[in-house]
Amino acid sequence: MIIGLTGGIASGKSFISDALHQYGFPVIDADQTAREVVEPGEKAYEQILEQFGIEILEVDGTLNRKKLADRIFADENQRRMLNQIMHPAIRQRILQNKADLQKKGHEVIVLDLPLLIENNLQFMVDKVMLVYVDEKQQKERLMERDQAGEEDAQRRMASQLSMSDKKTYADVVIDNNDTQEDSLAQLEHILKEWNIHPSSS
Image (tube, rainbow, N blue to C red; front, side):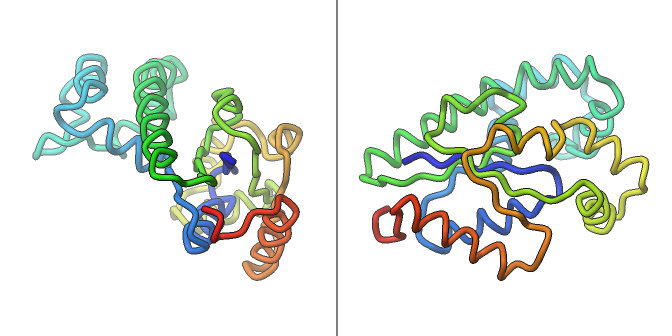
């Protein structure tokens, strides 16, 4: 089974991803993959440079992710351009990693995909697991986590599909509004329902 794990920004998805990893399931992390495909020498790195110019680079030649993020959060067209470069490169790398894990005999693989629903990637997974928080809690956590102002937090949340809309696409929902223990109990219940045990991976 391929589990597609998703959530919203500051929803607590990383906590569930870490828990699944600790249970022994291999996790392919799209954010980590996104960092790999933009390392100097990669095709996507060259394309980004061509599109956005050298002012988005650090002194050592690596991408300044903060500068790039500021540019794309403020401009819908630039965000679209970056996505057109990044998404095919990330998708290709994820599929390759998944094939490698399957060759090694892993029967259960977790794809940690923050934008699984926004990018219509449901075809890549068997089940969609959503880590959910209500939007008030989401904004508070985001402001606290990134020391972001309310306006900045609101803008970043608006760049993703709302949590309530995401719910309609999910096979299962982990409500992460309460304690971490509560969320773990929900996760364990779901795995039991699906008849998945860490040893099966």
